[in-house]
Image 1 (cartoon, rainbow, N blue to C red):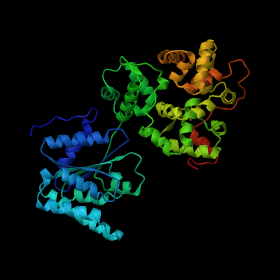
Image 2: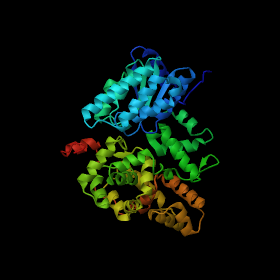
Image 3: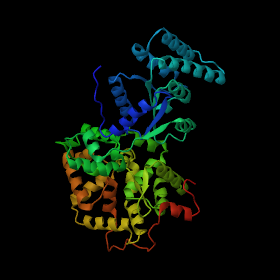
Length: 464
């Protein structure tokens, strides 16, 4: 078989690690765990490794993990797909035995475990007798108890590569798996130039600048970038390789893993992300106002904020305030929570927050400078922003004003550039903020210290 040169942009080092592991594990077998964020490219890495090994004559068994105990059914499917390379009368018997075990599992849990271990050892002992191979198990924690499968696959001297999502390590099965691993290979975010290559070399650099700002640290996640670019193209928001909407209108698709992760934290968590985007950043002193707007209790807001911090969706800045790690995530949930957007952008809410901030505050000073620039808005600008504050889409705004959607987008782009605002909610907040000299800014409380320190000083541990 002719050798195929297989490469993945930005992942050649990881492929080299797996290639070296195959050589070094030929005698006793090795277990490598590939760990990374959702969308970071774990599946693509395993597929590329499989293609490279097969092109070099290495035997490869790819197990597609599914929600079942011990992965019996997944192993059966993998062996059937691999039968031409690994087959023989004895393997037929092994597949038949596994199939019977899957269809007629012993009722006693202990007996089920012993039988499963015995049959898995028999199967992999059989295919391992033909020489070392690579056994790849993607999303290994989809299997309820994967350890017997992985140990049986490694025992004959095979290289076993199992992938799992970062953040899933808290389960007992994941901890046991990581303890058994000979090596854990963490996939880091890709470099900017690699992301640009994956997203499409035809995109203007200004598009990548906007994507970097909107996705934050997730710009290095190829899944997040590709999903966002695909969504922008599908909605005609990229034309002639350029972005035709304001940066603040870049949002993750509603079904993206990050959006689903935020929603799994409960209904309050996405609304707090919207609040962080609306205010530019959240300070501990903001929570009573936010809780009142969201009609929640302050303690519940604190717990939800802590969960968002734990999941990396809110991150601290130098002043100890919390900002959205991924503005495109906040934009995505804001599309589904338009009532929350309207309430946070209400004049009385903006006025209450500005009044509570000192003039020396970075956030307040920035808001006041933006508000000062907003004084020169025309009546048409004010009406446009008022419709934005009503939660309408650009198309709906255009329908009300008798304008094309593209015209609305260009006018908003101009207003974002003029005010320095980074989100639609912030734009509405600036429009509603008291103007300098109006007497709306009072108080002289000191600026916020670090979030965790403030919580600790109040006698509350993070997560408490």
